[in-house]
Length: 67
Image 1: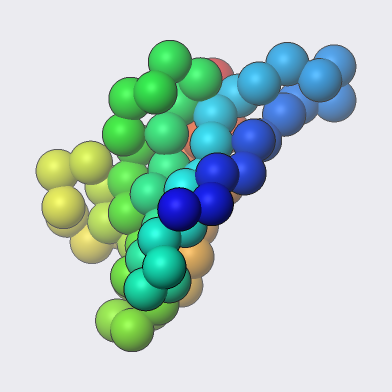
Image 2: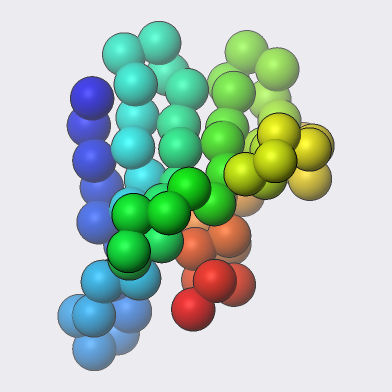
């Protein structure tokens, strides 16, 4: 699993995006709470409750909105 740190312009950690070996991704806030998921095969982003919120990958916007 690969974990990318998302930072603001002051280098504060806002959250993370984890990528699994199958390409699926998960967005986490700075405290490690799950914000949402992206499935590249379905090309959909889902929130933490598994509700579809967008077509395409918008995980970074979930992290910025959680701030």
